[in-house]
Length: 263
Image (cartoon, rainbow, N blue to C red; front, top):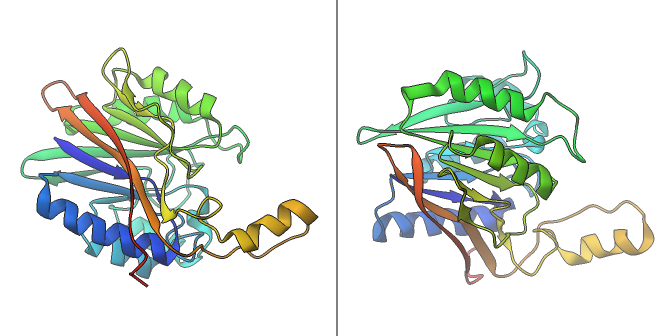
């Protein structure tokens, strides 16, 4: 099973370039599933039902999210009915939506589990304990399990990767928008990267226009951030999973710069 997982899509530029890139990828490579983090796909922060439909309609199998998924109020009513979008599973009981899902293609079954970190973030339920329960529940219903861990601290991401090593196919970090260079297979067969990076304007501050971000660092005054412009970077990993064991055979990270002709 070959799975491509893209980092956080940032606004309209990231969305347009990423979706074109996915279309080209499917035409040139045999890829079974494409997963993207879409929590910043609408205006650079948040996700809307219409933007989610656009992404899914372009050939994406699952959209993962994170702490910004609640920014648009319509999402609370949309998430329960759309199993191809997952929100962090460790939000308290009763929160709308699904924390994990299973998608099928050509007799292959891929489970995607979304979790959110607690270090430097909102102190929600324990991602380690929730992961235990979710992995046990998924069990043999999937040939592979991929975890999107949306977290701030590199230490927390690495800890969860090692905690789940051998029990899931891959643990990939999102949220910081800066790709790390540590893609590897952990000792017991789980593919891992601390952060996938982003799909967004490369000459930016994590996807945002520097002219709207830098003044805040200088003056400490509030500033309205805007999505950056210019060339876009498409970042993520491709993993190959042995479906007989559920373990990763190969993981390759990529970070490809595109032109800025799409508006």
